[in-house]
Image (cartoon, rainbow, N blue to C red; front, side, top):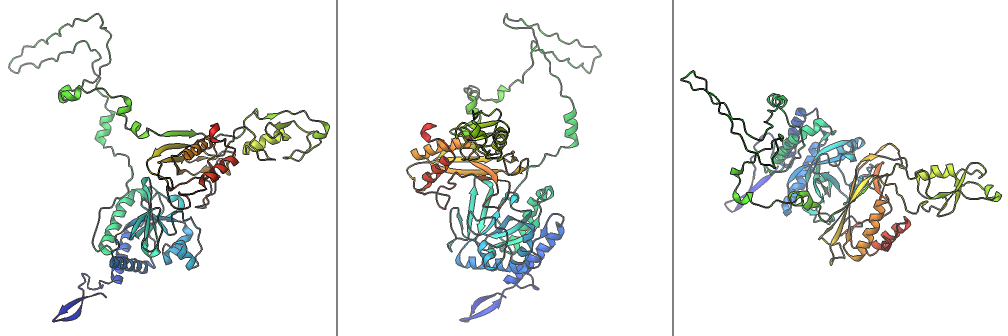
Length: 545
């Protein structure tokens, strides 16, 4: 129970705080108990879409977060608690209900084994701002309360003075936070993402945030953005009938307007004769063919200075043109097969009897059976049927692993490569700007040379940087060649997440950060390592491109 100290007659005396709830003391445990009761009531209300993530230990974990918030407040760190989202697998829920969400170091200290999704941005608990941004990392979504404390933008490291690292990935909905310790994260509700959850989660998040502000944030609230989802506009029955009603057809003659018939006077029964339209004298250049009428502009509402303005060109009126200026976009379409008939790199050799008695390296049968061909570059012999089937899956010679064609071919899915120059500089190259490369690979169907043909593969968006120097521009030429020949990416199991059928990097090195970390600058050996990887893929030198 908390007390406040007052000085009366020169002596300090303790007096208990007055609680608005007499049955529950205003202590840390009391706040946790009141918050747990409010969460239980909210779960009954929305039980069809959300369920309480940790019913048994919600009280203990809530008290732990409130205590951590109290410690932050003592040293002057931010104490705001807000909503975030985390995805996990079903088999991890048992451990989460008891221990909460743990970092890798905390799991190792508690001897808890679980599938590791990687720690590219630091060892911690990854919480996303948008509820569906990273649903590929698990089938169970968790709404969590996060206490960020002192925040730093990536790249940064947890050094005792930083409690959270914010990673911004261009799109606001893809932003996420890495929390240092489990005491900064409180699992509240679990859900499975579907249309029902997508429709209810904006209002539900506001209700949960209101409970956090009331019981944990000391009644202080702040305007936090709630994710919204595009919905189809609701059409009323009156609008439907209006849409079905045919539009009135305008007069198709533009020579003379038809005069309206005046209404008869109320005091007479004499029928009035409508006025005849005045005949129009046509010039020799005018035609009597009726034309489709155009909408007449209302010139009276336009100022004279605006009507006299010069006509803009399409490049000036389209805002996308200004955004795309200075960008180069390359498109790559994946081949249905790495080998086409007839082969442009196989010839029919003249073989002696001794050579015909040799064995084919693929089927291990003699050359007496079937047609025999040889590759033009490496001069190795094969049965035509054998080499045709082998080259469908790999463009390399089965014996020496040299490309069968003069141009290498990779196993990359279809995608795009966007190149633009930015003013930011790479670490160690402060005298130059940077070249920003954005790779975008949409999801699609795997080809016959991929690990699981006709199965679906995931999507990927990667950003890399090069210094805008002579070395960087020469390397850019080779990277463009590699992308146009499908050598940049492949389909396989991700080393970071462990998810199969993912779009992964090939053997070409890329720097995804401007500075800091193993994937950022400065790196004295980067150009040597990257050019060496391109040489192994038989990419020509920059001076030949």
